[in-house]
Image 1 (tube, rainbow, N blue to C red):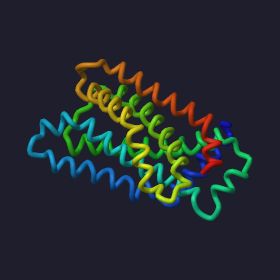
Image 2 (image 1 turned 90 degrees about the vertical axis):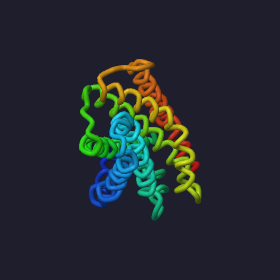
Image 3 (image 1 turned 180 degrees about the vertical axis):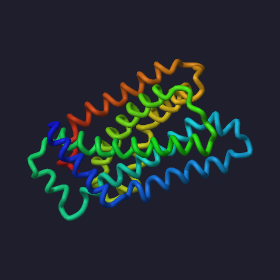
Image 4 (image 1 turned 135 degrees about the vertical axis):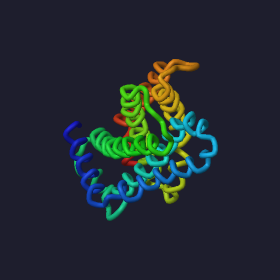
Length: 224
């Protein structure tokens, strides 16, 4: 399973490295979202700083949607999906590989967007370690859920518009929990529910969708 996962992830990352879709399209889109938020809230810098965590994760969420759609589009042309079914690769390995490739792209985007938040919003992070852990766990959840729902929508004619409708409600807990933990990490203070509780929610979500994807991806791929 792990060998197949590395093969699939390497294949997807090589394709992205050659096409540079994430660098040339997804990243500028996410940065533009941050800039538009900055223009909308610039008259009140205090509100902008307080909302920085939520705005950051909204931009990441939009980027994740584009990355997942791109990941599924790689397999949609010229019988590639049929070839993947007949390749003999472990379906669980295919799932982990595609989710891993999406996660790597998202982690790079998150680092660059984090720098954008610091520059555009004037935020000074107080807990880099907590931010790093939050980013890793939330990215695992986003990539796993995105890959799982991506293969569900892949066989449908209206997959480009249906995928956001399916995925956004599912990712709402990740968005909320990651925002709350990030607020604590940025401010260095906790308010309301402790950051540890939100982090536990993120871990639970990531483990749930990784486990479900490992079990269900094969039948979903066949049905798609």
